[in-house]
Amino acid sequence: MSTASSPHLAVATPERVALSLPVAGIGYRCLAWLVDAGLLFFFWVVAYFVFTLLVSDVLGVFQGLSGLGQTLLVVGIFATQWLYWTLGEVFFHGQTPGKRALRIRVVRLDGSPVGLYESAVRNLCRAVDFLPGVYAAGCISMLLTSRHQRLGDLLAGTVLVREERIDLDKYTARTPESGVLGPKATRALTPDEVELVLAFLSRAPGLEADIRRKMGTRLVDKLGGLADEERTHVLASAESTEAFLRAHVQVER
Image 1 (tube, one colour):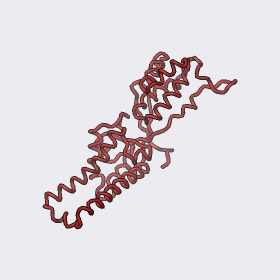
Image 2 (cartoon, rainbow, N blue to C red):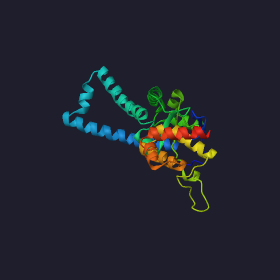
Image 3 (cartoon, helix red, strand yellow):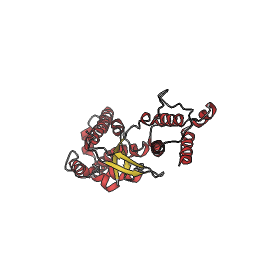
Image 4 (tube, helix red, strand yellow):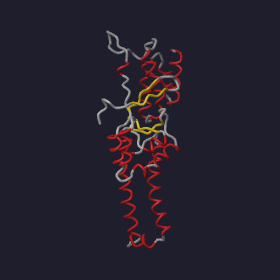
């Protein structure tokens, strides 16, 4: 899963800052799918075990169903798995447990969070991507497209991107005496620092709450110029922190 030649998705934030999001390759996607498939397999094993406690002859019950009943059962099984993928992506910012473990997420082609329509379409197409077996069609599509998109992604207008941690330390200005500029210093922001704050503001809604809070706190302390009481008020919530950062950057611009 080398990232040396990994394609990137270029997007523009509302603040007109260009961001480059690394696209998740077939290796990341396969590993994430294995995690999710393992969870689904465990769920169905448990469900089967519970059902055998209630019914001794499971196969006989299935064979005893009418053609319509068997069809509805198969559709119900598919719908359960479809809901797993779709609800995970919609309610957890484009991530199922498998994607979360591999630090990848589904986004629209403009970099914005995936919606119900896009997630529903891409996951309904899993049946096509799976043909003729073991996701052969989907894998071929990912190998042939520049952004590693399977057929469902092409139809829904989505792509999977990898999450990268922003290294705040590399943007920290240094002084010869102490090595690190203190939080109380007042100074004009460099262009790199302005871009860093804007990049954080654009990505903040999709970050985990704890990471969002820590990154916001470090940026506020980095800007400096706040008394203890003011700092406490600014850091009281993610909304107040990001409002302070947004106002500060707008002044600089």
